[in-house]
Image 1 (cartoon, rainbow, N blue to C red):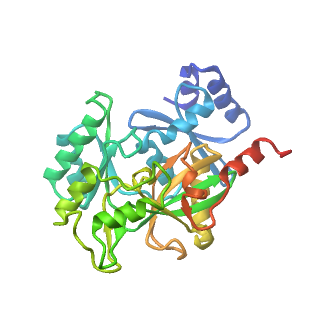
Image 2 (cartoon, rainbow, N blue to C red):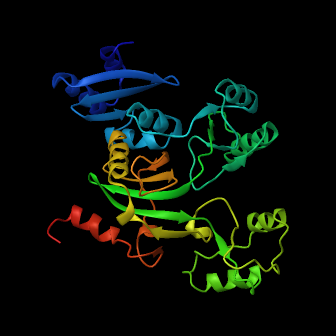
Image 3 (cartoon, rainbow, N blue to C red):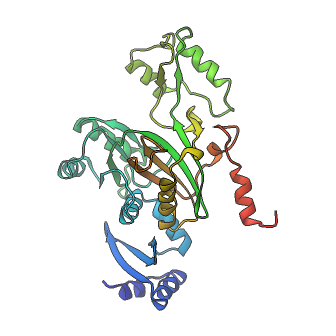
Length: 327
């Protein structure tokens, strides 16, 4: 099917008009089938935009980010690094593709269209563990027939949330998982209690099943006294609502990496987005990195006081001034 034939099949009027106008203006347009989904690639000068779907244009472009597989495809198409991985419907297909693609353990497994770490499994080190992880991801959304699972290599490094708006990086924060640092005197329970007294309500460390299992696997109890300056991670996810921390790193972020983040957001048809990025050194030019995903409606309180550790930024004020320039 060529591009003109595709346009004729598009049912939504605004989207059809938009695609026709790209041709009328002489823009470079390419129709690509990714996992049987038609993705339109539009290029003009140094800018590239991807969009797809049978829904209103801007919702369509934002929906690129809902599907993690298509997000990876778009980013890789414009030279942005993402973790090596595969998409599967079942353990049997998944293990075969992992072998064929020579993916290196440890792996991470998550639903293609998911959020809030639902159905995610980290640090998968064996095929048995991968089977359990894929079953967990499928079950997290009720074993629906349309559920696809993304399995990726784990990239080791520090994780950051980068907030991009209107062509520039507004803020970059380092995300630290919920955990405590030993002082050689207080028990783990006392350290958690002391930490929670410094947090806003709803952002405390939770002693739930995950945290208790992590303690047990490490051979610890709540009465254990950690050595001085040793950090113990209570969970893998970085959610602040589970006690995670965020530290301001904007001023130290490499300028070229900032440009890469802006390019990632704009390639997905967004003006505003939050990127989850892993790198060993946020300041070092040319340091290895991967972008895990892009959120078109990012939770930005982690960039503002009082949650962020550091100066922070008033994101709400920036957005309002953009919407109401007379402010």
